[in-house]
Image (cartoon, rainbow, N blue to C red):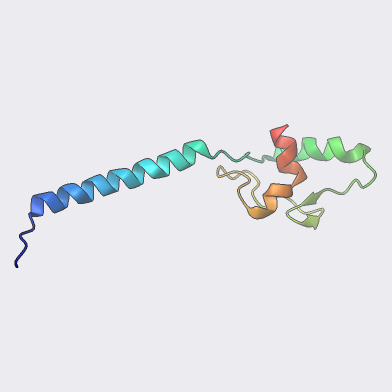
Length: 92
């Protein structure tokens, strides 16, 4: 049995799949917003924790280090960011 495949149909399917992929990417970008960490935010955070017993901030899993996602538009989207005081401070 020979199956006839229409080229126009294949092209239409490919276009639809491409549009679905674009739509999925857009939804992911719009629905998941991670806090953007800026230099000013980090300075504000460090001023705020001066009152605490340990005045050295723990960022990116290391004491006294700068945020690895600093000024990146993708925001604090790494696994280490989930428990980061700076990301939590930004959300409050």
